[in-house]
Amino acid sequence: MIIKPRTLHYKLEFLLMLSRRLKPSHPSYSLLQEALTIELAGWKGEKELDYPLSHLPNDHLILHNVRLHDGTHYFQNDCIILTRKWILLIEAKNIAGHLFYDQTKDQLIRTTETGMKEGFNNPVTQVLRHKRQLQKWLSNNQLPDTLPIHCLVSNSHPRCVSSFDDPTLNIVTRTYSLPEKIKTLPHNPNSMSSKDLKKLSSSLVKLDTPLKPDFFEQYNIRESDILPGAYCDHCHSLSIHKKYNRWECATCKKVDKEAHVQALKDYVLIHGSLISNAKLRRFLRMSCPKAAHRLMVSLQLKTSGETKGRVYHLPFHQKF
Ligand SMILES: [Zn+2]
Image 1 (cartoon, helix red, strand yellow):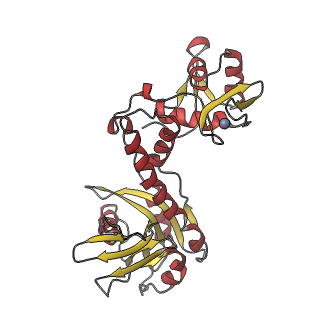
Image 2 (tube, rainbow, N blue to C red; image 1 turned 180 degrees about the vertical axis):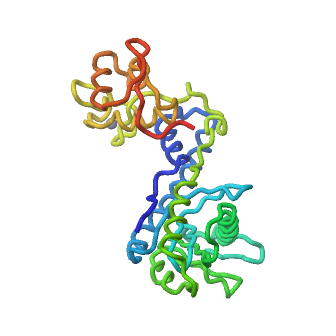
Image 3 (spheres, rainbow, N blue to C red; image 1 turned 180 degrees about the horizontal axis):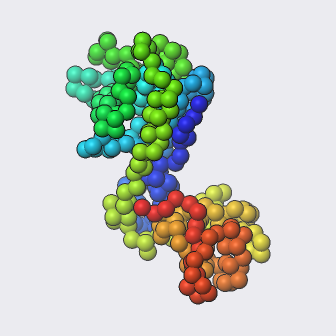
């Protein structure tokens, strides 16, 4: 049973917004494209968990993307599964190629089909560190800590072959084998009560703290570096304009009735959730205040202030 569904990471949302709107001449543009490629691969790895995990019994409580504070550091778990017998942490990956888990030197070495070697941080070390942090978090929050915490590194890429220098390492698996692997996890003879399990699961949801760093500062981006307009996902331009009751792309002529919704989600990431009629017109490149007002009314937005000082509250994620 999914207790906490997966939602798009703030970083991925932000990078996707920038891929639509950052001026390509910006000095950080190529760096951001690289970061987006890495985030998308990670996201794909996490999404690939869905099908195998749907085979688990209903009493397995699944929580995606939980970020907790252990008293000193934050730690982000791709997936936590709770049962009355054990807790499982899954680190999801989507890496192709021949993967050598070098436990001696604590690194993951990938050799591609062309023979190129590349090093990564060892996901085994990462998930085992998360285990220690979760133990600390349980103790800090006076939650029952008698259950064993198991760890798995799960790679969803169909073209990956793994090898290890430590033959006893048995926590790396293919994502599609997860249900079978999970069945083999050792059980604690003393199971947790259903009440305690519910308490633990609620605490994980309640104390989840999604990461929302200031990417403007991190990548040296000014608000003026961001292009306005509604985005056309057909020809990848910001050429969609309001035409009567619909949105039409000036470049490819595609009609998209909902083009304003994604644009306003982007607006929240850039400017925050409050928007005035004038700001909306500037961002969506509309000229008519009445049409902008009608659009706000159709979205049934909460308002505050009167007449010229009126602002609308966009119901999407808040800016940090
Ligand atoms: Zn278009």
